[in-house]
Length: 260
Image (tube, rainbow, N blue to C red):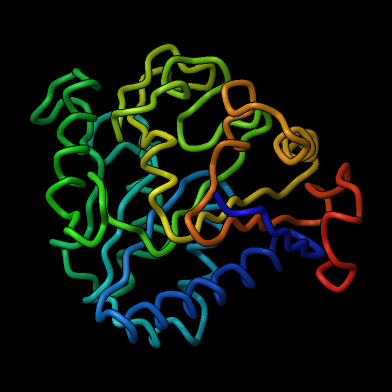
């Protein structure tokens, strides 16, 4: 478990641009060290804002996109091509504009496809795909992701792990179907905390006044069942990337003045 580090930016636009630059550096470093890199994407306004900033960055071509594996932390279990799918939004924000290897883009299954409307079967299939990609050096059923990004919800949810729901209590499976989510759509597929914690680095993105209380709760010692964001951490680094509005309820002792 790594101790959370905080970086606070003036506003959400600056946060997205800085996070995109940070991600480019991390991917390039991983590819230089190991030949390939793996990143887990998140949806929502902050995740998509980061992808859009990455798309417009002149430095994006420093990445060898053909040697980048992309995974997702969660997905809305809706039909292929639905505008609500995180995958659809990611394509629009970035993926269609860069030369990715299609075999390295690991979208979560959509409803109505091979698994019909069975989110649990879709989750099991994604878990199997992760396990197949894991090597002996990963010491577990998922690859050791270089960076896993998560948006933080106003209720402290991350991925589709909502407070008190069964998915956040999962200790063995790496991917689960989520039913009865309090945020529409109610049916989803999500990585679990054990899968999230396999990442070298976990980045939690929070911007806006509506995220301030969630950040305060998650960073003040709350339990992961009540505040799932509190249970999201990386093997070597846990990084909270916030704007000033989301950090408004945090004590300044948690982050250096220079990061504001």
